[in-house]
Amino acid sequence: MLEFGAALASVLAKGDVLALTGDLGAGKTTLARGIIQGLCGDIEVPSPTYTIVQNYDAPKFELWHCDLYRLEKPDDIFELGLFEAMEECVCLIEWPDRMGEHLIRTALTIDIQFQGDGRDVTLSGSDSWIERLAHV
Ligand SMILES: Nc1ncnc2c1ncn2[C@@H]1O[C@H](COP(=O)(O)OP(=O)(O)OP(=O)(O)O)[C@@H](O)[C@H]1O
Ligand SMILES: [Mg+2]
Image 1 (cartoon, rainbow, N blue to C red):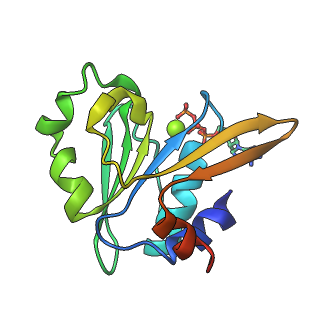
Image 2: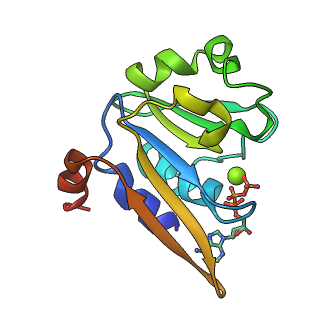
Image 3: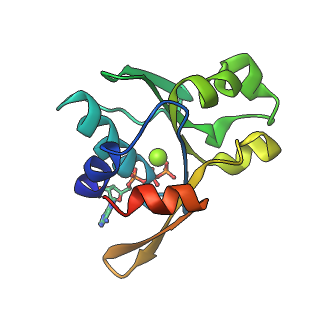
């Protein structure tokens, strides 16, 4: 999961949003950790369960790691600044369903499902994502 994250990190650009879905404990934070460490080096990446958002300065853009599990209502993303961040930064969003219709429609969805001791990962998004991911 960490290696996959590091590989994904290499294709990310400002304005990209990754919606990380899957049950509790599926591995969303672990994948985000791989992406963040791929971009920022071997730094500590805590789960933003309580803070909801953690920001990182990646070399080419600001990186947001969000866990919306505890978001009370979709409109709370405006107060967090997440609506602007989806266009101006790179956002990795766990529990994106909590933001309802506000999730930007260009997002790449990465769904993680338990599969024995491992995980099945399914990516879905626009054609342009398919093209870019071909290089991962
Ligand atoms: N591919 C994998 N194979 C086996 N274990 C994994 C895999 N990916 C993650 N894990 C383990 O699963 C546990 C939960 O991972 P993680 O915290 O990333 O899940 P999460 O989806 O973010 O959970 P939450 O819904 O609570 O935010 C961790 O112990 C992690 O090491
Ligand atoms: Mg998590």
